[in-house]
Image 1 (spheres, rainbow, N blue to C red):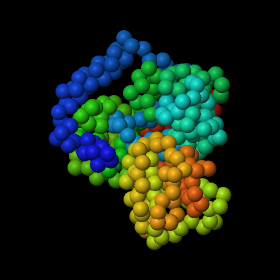
Image 2 (image 1 turned 90 degrees about the vertical axis):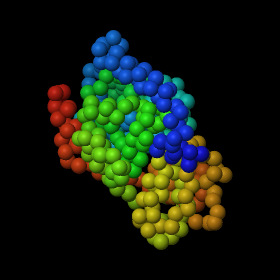
Image 3 (image 1 turned 90 degrees about the horizontal axis):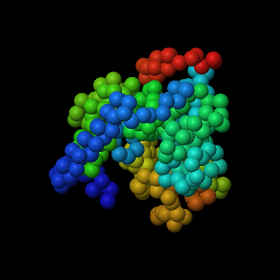
Image 4 (image 1 turned 135 degrees about the vertical axis):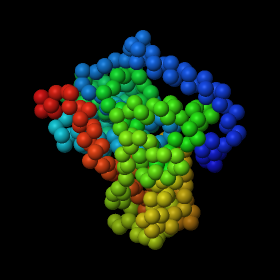
Length: 332
């Protein structure tokens, strides 16, 4: 399944048979966007600035670390940010405030991670405008960061940040369903900033006005109470599991650190069971922070989580703050 997904992403000739449907999909999405731009369909505009962090491809690209970094930068600049998210994978009653102890099955894994790491209000709702109204009614937040939702034009936005995986890029360049694009590549030109997650390793040129982001791994943290006090050290062998948009990135990160890695990729947003977390031969188990929010209480002894921090260049932060300069100063 994973092999065929990669072939679909990169443009296997078999999927070219779906290009007529991609043309129809492209016409519909372009028409919908133009209707919003012309005012024939109306997006709700919040009384505070809205920053949307999304992508134009299917699958994970690294939006969550970017969201956390943007929230922290806003706080340091004096803003009072809040996060809204669709809550993929959850089944809560909407709008739903995400607390650090909320069940991942109800609110989704990424919103729960954001709530635990950011320390700011997080609300999930497929209708982002309703989530923003809830935030403004229940908190004193004065800037909204929307995790995903680039194509959710029902919520007007003031800043758009598009995140692209540097290894996978835009894949075949084909629109859904033939390829991974939700919108055409020309959509990048209208974004305020494009963030490349990692080194660009694609044959096509790097997108214009792109900022390269690196992910800095943090200290390993134990998941279970009976986990040893010291994490494994290179060149130890570890079982590595990842249910994220692009698991090979996590496995490569561990190998670059000197570990021998036994890979266990899972689908994005996978709901784990106890049996799935026990591997042979015996070795420490290491996972992403996104997986860890669902695996506490399930993981065996000697299980570890690796947090990451997004490192973005000064020009990116200058661009963001320039876009926000038209609003009232943060202290107002």
